[in-house]
Image (tube, rainbow, N blue to C red; front, side, top):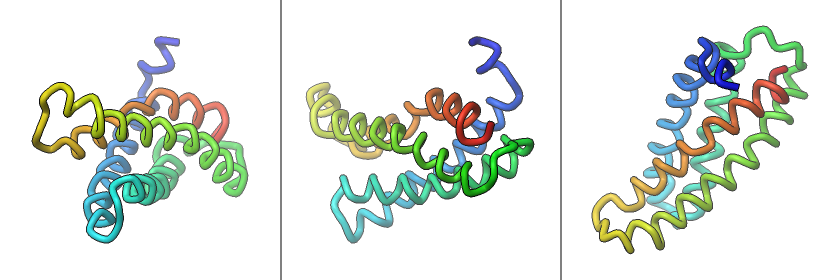
Length: 133
């Protein structure tokens, strides 16, 4: 299991995923101008997910034998798990944990950043073995 996460492929996955996460977080700011925080999290996640798919297909899993259509479907299913993780963690941290710990500034930013970061490992395994196998 350790060699799975100590590979060049995982490093490139982290870099492309980091780019997609940045798109996710930045787009949440824009969406939050027109909608509630919970809805902005979901829409931002979808924006980041589209970015992640394109980057993963081009740079991480270039030798995938899956058809584009099948890999998109599997990518979406793996990301359903990840979006639930992101949503629950972000709201839990923003609404309960961080305020209880006395955090008063950048609460949503911290919560959302952690919520986006958590699914890295589960997503990599899911994409490697299902989305782009």
